[in-house]
Image (cartoon, rainbow, N blue to C red; front, side, top):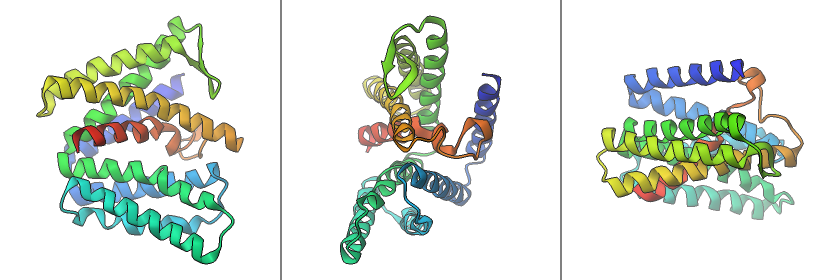
Length: 247
């Protein structure tokens, strides 16, 4: 518990410093590092040994700073997937799983950068703030009131905890948006609710993948707290909701 809080606070402080500096090309490099690490961690979950695939994802990521509009991200995503599918067909590969890391976590990371690039750091902060509240609320409400299991994919997650986290993330996420984002009440609430909801299932999906791969954590970057994907899972689903609402 203590280590979980220390790790979470430390990561948030680092993000806060980066957010306040808000240097575009530095943030581009940071996102590139996040993509590379999370992509490599996902290979273990999908049981893929070809680590060189990460260079393909990074090559397409390098295109993003030169896009003209928010929806251009879909063109890059589709082109990336078509290239991988074409390579699989050309080489007559037996492992269709090669496509999976280009869907998760690559697509959500692309979307996170596109949100930052087109809507600014405040929007990215809104996403992270909402998911942190939802995740923290779920943890503490689950500890205090949890009695009913939420899903077999994550036995420690309780229905009471999920509901508590969902309410906290939705309410305070909406308040944050109304104060710091140029957005109306309905959109602020709608987006915060969806981010909080999908954030829960992002965490659940990561748990599902780890159980399927029979591993405890996605990686070892954060020591006993696991890998980067273990900490980003809620953001990777939450960002899809925010992207589709705002784009």
